[in-house]
Length: 199
Image (cartoon, rainbow, N blue to C red; front, side, top):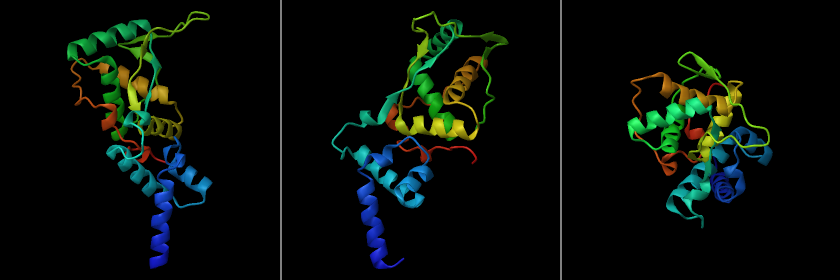
């Protein structure tokens, strides 16, 4: 690459890293195609943006890069989930956030089963016109949320099904050892830092 081309590439990355395009919850190749740039350039811009966030150089708090992910669970499952979290001395939302993070780092391909725990099938019978009160609501990074979506699409399932599999995994394994709990800020800001599944 010539010196002018290298300088232009560097300038382009600097321009992109402070735009909304680096924060979109979609595959990098899709965004790059929309912008007319290479995927490599966009990934560099996303990485630079993530570093800016970590250093607090964008004029807003890291909290702005997090979202609250909500999953509704059957009442009986929620009761058992809370009991297990209490035994492990881990707060409910922190437990699920940790499971999501480590799942996304792994190459696990869970079966897309419904709410089946210990051989029993459960369902959510939402009251007409009312909200379902049994929820787990961890705060996760936007990168993790995007990674869930991409991985689900590649395996023709849903992000909810992937998260549900992690709740069930903990409940099904009596001796499950919880990994080290992570905070939202310890999660990756960009989806590509996680394993997104086979194309």
